[in-house]
Image (cartoon, rainbow, N blue to C red):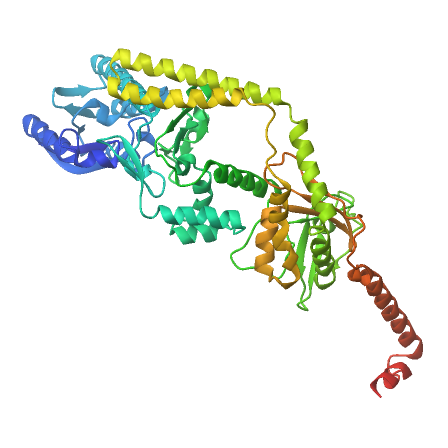
Length: 560
């Protein structure tokens, strides 16, 4: 009996237990082939979750190509040619070349293939081309079917890929929230309240690190199912696993506007549209400023919100070996090509001297009615300077997109893709969107996002700033997103990145206030203390003539 190697391959783990093409069905077909041609199976190679276009990157397949070079191996038995390969490019034909060089036969249920003969090479090439074409046809049909489901507002992937706390019924095509959705509501509330540490929020949800950011950016929690991304099918979108073989999970890219689908699938949503829009602004501002909030509050209050007024670099924090804390310009630690410091202006600033200045500025300026009125006026000017024609053009584009979506629904109903009942439901939702957009087109200038009362309510917690602990201050700072420009204990500017504003709000720190500025003389007193210490050191050096002399009079007098 000829000794052969059995090859079994399934493209996904779900296909392994399939009755038609799974592992048991392939093993039974290979046993029948071996009995028919009098073969002895000496080893079985199982490739699970391996695509036919990626078999050459699998170590088990490379080992099989090495084993067929042995003298005691006569051939390979498999259920069908596509189990051996579904070539995607000419490099995959190296498998056929290995069979030709070793005179190895490929045993199939319909008969053996000898690639060392002219007929065998011709048939092998034709069968490989057919297998590759089958793969492309299957993928196109699968992608087309999934795209049709997405267009109708249905879930095309498996339930294991649903967003957290979201359920989907494949019989009624309805989405719903699970009981753990209350945790998602709490995460949104905490983020709006200033708790913006993604890892801590992920721990609260019981998910992996950083997952809370994806949840905060998913509009499904407002009731809208949005497909704004798709898989990149180009060569740049291919990801490679640790073993070097390509992964099926390709990177995602943005969809064109005409291929972006938005469907209202849950009404009412878990989060209001206003809160969701505010969260998106806060996420974008947090990413822009690169502000990190650690799980455990550190020794500093203003780290992440300070910039050097001289060079414009971010100010970092430092703890020395004597457990003293400082703010330092990041360019102070960097050198240019000549070895000079990039920021020779701003020196080390002691935390205990700088933070009282910032606390005094916040408690005085951001609670002053004059400053709050100026903040409100700046926000109003930003809205007035915004061209209403831009908003009108955007609404008109959405208006046209809704009519295009309406036409697509009618075409799908005419082609029999969806039923008349489903078509009526879709048209009802689309007509509501069209009526809402029509109402927006008839509106005049946009209404200001804030009122004077809302501005006062926003800054009211700052009245008790001196009595707050560091964690509470950090939460308030995350909501205000301030930017302090500082150099050598002098505050040169303060800007607020408030939600709803397209540009930072400038706070006039030179405005006269009725509150006393007690901490303003702190840097001067610090300079006087340093000068006195330098003078004392020079005096001690004059009083000590040589190394072995007695202690100086100044120190003796101080001890007495």
